[in-house]
Image 1 (tube, rainbow, N blue to C red):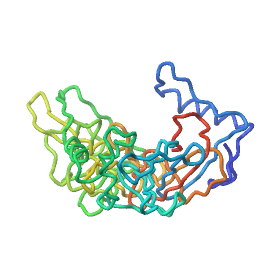
Image 2: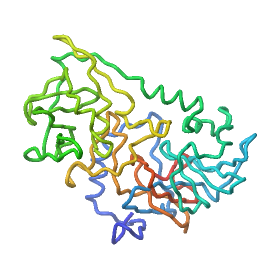
Image 3: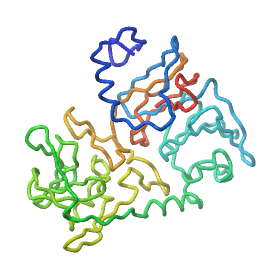
Image 4: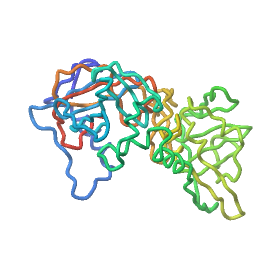
Length: 352
């Protein structure tokens, strides 16, 4: 796809520069492909629509015009031709959608969408059967059994025993180490490295794959940490390293360190009595254009980029907000757009 500006309009490129193909090969060479799964191809003559947003946003996609089905014993309808959770309450004629564990409400599919506390949902949401095609949303409704079970599960740590002489960390910086304050604390974090390095109480600490390391200075040498200062666990949600609060040291011997992390390290937090994904904060990137936002946890699930590009097909359809990559931390002030059209890639296409 090509455009004269980031905001478009975007059209299919008939003769992309060879340099772009070389970059594509470099980016995809290390991707793991599932056995027997072929790369989806966009049909010729049907290029995807591209929407660009520079604010946190989400694109909700349907395959054609929305089709509804009733949920038994409730006044709710749900959209059957979407991978998103979209509902309409026939009593109030209001629409609801669930994104990253947070609820949003609008008077029409075109918006404007507003964040809604789960406790303010129509009571009929609690009457959805666990066996319903939408039974999984029960885990995002405060106060009911499924939500309580999810909150309990979110507090169970994954633990490991780390051998001191085998665990290694090598931190690379783009030039001399540069640090930025963690607002509201006396700590600082490195902004010109892809590693998560924190200066606290005169020492340096870093997390790698759920294991804490420490060093006398930012350049190392690094060793497995067997004690973490309490101030680490005061990092605020607005920090890109907030998830590091969920990595712990449980004990140590001269040979081993016993470590663990809870799902918060992977970006799953408890808010409003349910498990949500991402802090909901629009977080400033760690590096000044070099590294982007910090990777959040072993799975890099909570990168809070405020800019995204997504592809859909069909149209023209009004977009009330923008869209973003699937790792955005969906918050209470996220713009939501509806795209109704045939997916260009296949049934699994979600529009993000």
